Image (tube, rainbow, N blue to C red; front, top):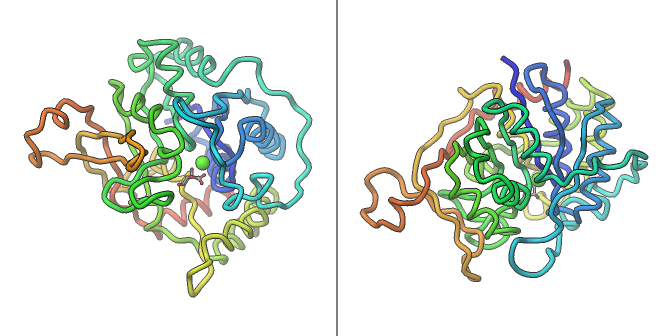
Amino acid sequence: MSHKIILDTDPGIDDAMAIFFAFQHPEIDVLGLTTVFGNVPVDMAAKNAITLCDLAKQSIPVCKGVARPWVGPESTYAHFVHGDDGFGNIDYPAAKGEPDPRSSAQFIVDMARQYPGEITLVAIGPLGNLALALRLEPDLPKLIKGVSIMGGAAFVGGNVTPVAEANIWNDAYAAEIVFAADWELTMFGLDVTYACPFSPDFLTQLKSVNPSLGGFVHDAAQFYTQFYSQNEEQDVCYFHDAMPLAHLIEPSLFELKTGHARVSTDPLNQGQTSIALPNTTASPDWLEAQTIKVATKVNNQQLTQLYIDTYAL
Ligand code: BDR
Ligand code: CA
């Protein structure tokens, strides 16, 4: 079965790895990349997405989306994780193409109307484009098959604050809108992404099975690995963003729990994603909140193999 997706992204090194996974997998049909601020400013995110498409020889639309959070000041970005260029400072030459004239949100709405009930939105950056698309087309949930996001931290701590993960923290009000919409949302947060560490050997394997795309990820991820390895005995990095895509292809690799979800927007807890599991509360504030699925466990070995096998295709 082929999965039609729109990949909403802020490339970003793990974004690049996820985008190439999607391009490589024969059962994933990427209709377009919609970009958003996050790891890098949105102009850079769009330029980087165009460069990744060029490298992978994919001619699909790349759209530019929201440049700042729904509420509050411009983001400070994550260059300390992803490098000044979003690609680990490898000086990779930027491709020449231009973004599609439509905004990311408009593209999502247009495609949803064109393929009603067929598209999975896979969001691996902050959620401003999805929130805006919901405002442009209030019936969007009825037109979309499902939403899979990398973001949040349900039963573990955060990576920006003790309670918040970066994608949700970056645009908490937008995330609140997206989590509250009446669609099937599945969340792949730090609960699973930090449970699956990757060693430098994995990067070498990606490069050897696919010198072009895997080679790019290998080179870009050197800086990223240094960031993640600062307080570790052995070098390590995390490919957060590929998990929702892996789940589309091999759902059996994951354990999911269902619960009512809320996103905090108060300054101290900004971006916290909290889940009320069944029969854990009688509070209407929680029971009236939308139900989502949350990934809580992943099979590391099989996931790693899926990535390598897909890069090898
Ligand atoms: C998320 O934040 C970004 O740094 C990554 O690209 C990923 O989407 C992890 O918290
Ligand atoms: Ca990302």
